[in-house]
Image (cartoon, rainbow, N blue to C red; front, side):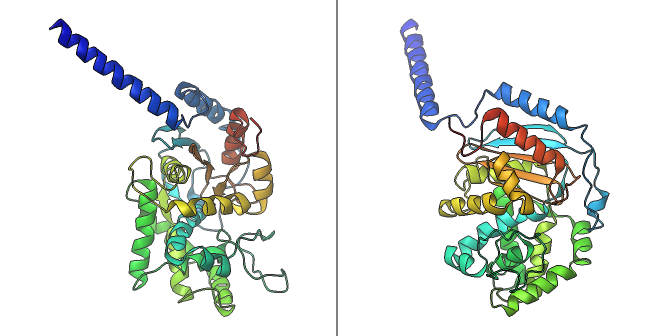
Length: 341
């Protein structure tokens, strides 16, 4: 019996050593201990919760109903751990952050060249909803994150009809989130009633020869995608898929091919926060994306993703608390991609 116990202990010790070696080889995606992560999120949340600057988006009536006091932070790692604080389970409309995941599917369907040739990766220097004409810039091409670029991107998603195309879009969103997401019908109806500007942009770029198929169908699917409800935790997991090379670390399922992850993160770094993309990257130094629903997503490639939710926006359309919180975390942990370690 004693010898059997010794063999059992020896086997357990060997297994423990193997697991330890594997963990060291894989590398811990966290810059600090899990306890320190929880403490940092709690401290940053408490620091910026009293900040009441900014204004909830009111040009879309349904978004104007958001509670300005809501504030959540979440972090999801490439090895499948989630840390959260505050209002991280409150659902909100994903809005422009949806453009990341529509781009992922468009890359899969049409390939890199088609997106570069018809959408572009230019930083426009103009507002995300600008009516950009040929006499304003030397090129008509935009990028996948301004409205007209996202609408054009959406038009490249394949399917036998509009319903199948939308079904494939939602399947991609669900793969990223690791669960079934739903459309906020009130937000969708509100945006459909106020999207005349986007319709004009769609027809303009159809006339330029960039937008594929029916502009109105692309507009409808684009608007529906912006109206998908997520939580701060969902957003962190969706970002963690990109941090993990396209694999969802919670489910093990592939959300996007690895070859396109670098492209997506590059566009996020170039123009993820619209007119304030320059200041964001200068101070935060991470690929990021914002939405007027109050969400912010930042990705640390190979490590983890951080998401914030707080509805009051700055003049550029970015969450005031969200930007400050992610910037504080970046500085605390030295996350800037150009930080010399």
